[in-house]
Image 1: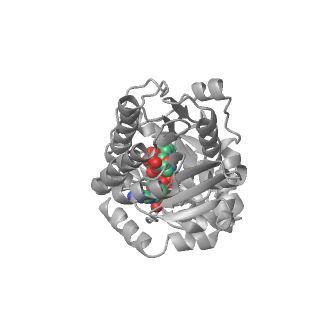
Image 2: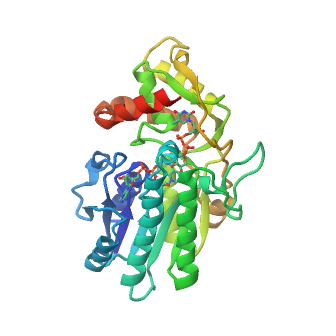
Length: 351
Ligand code: NAD
Ligand code: TDX
């Protein structure tokens, strides 16, 4: 018998698809409703293996549409929300901030309002908001982001995510809405749209195209395998404290240029090319405006309170990721057809 109706937003995207798959497969007693607008980043191919599961329903809708959110909450009586839908690419937020304000801020408030208005009692209800470490700003050479680090976002993307985090907390503090928030570091893995560094580099190496490295390639990111993020979300959803925030990260910092060299070595091996072939494609390009120098997450709270640990070493995860992209050519061809080419021509000519 179905015990819980869970609304997952953005489930056709990169991280959302892994969260949906996990919840559908691990919790047959739950009914999972995947609500997604299917923007350029949303793709139902990401969920082919579970789309016919009896405990899964897809709803195409825009979270910004407040009336629609109200009517869906009233129709389905969701018990909980795991909110991932967002515009997620920093470079796009620099060229078009308004879309980020609309989806990430207004969309989040429209969901909060629908939950608040339709949940007659808040007992056993939960609004879980999935966020990013970018809200904390940028670190120097030392130190880590903890849950107590002050927000200091720099890009329109991170400012919109920071704003949505504040609004989720405001609904908790003001109306007593039961919420949880997690802030995660950079994810990588299958289904990642090839505009983000790792899948873009894999795609370009495969096609003998330049690998664009911003600035000097010295910016540092803290990488986590996407399925490890999904296990953390599952754990926080079920066992985390209501009202609390959890940082998620794998203590896995890499300078962009070192990561690209590692990826080039893996690609040479997988494509049976001579050592050093892929690295010749590395091309330094104009830096990202306002480029944050370093992100590094302290995930001690999540480990101590809930016993979470990442399962994969980076090199192992990266090899799995490369294998996935090399065996899923149709997916890659599909998502890089049409507007993708146009977008990248514009991006590159700008630099
Ligand atoms: P993504 O861009 O791959 O997917 C976003 C999904 O949201 C897509 O399926 C898209 O169609 C959907 N969407 C966008 N606007 C919508 C709207 N108005 N209504 C309904 N659906 C809409 O993003 P992702 O990388 O999977 O990120 C998911 C979430 O996790 C985001 O909230 C992001 O801020 C957060 N996050 C991402 C990372 C990362 O490394 N990618 C790290 C930490 C946190
Ligand atoms: O072509 C590139 N060349 C390059 O040098 C791209 C796309 C990126 N970069 C650099 C910029 C960053 O320092 O690589 C690093 C990673 O860039 P992205 O993959 O665009 O990720 P980032 O900007 O760090 O943000 C990601 O992590 C946090 C996600 O896109 C966000 O949604 C998430 O919140």
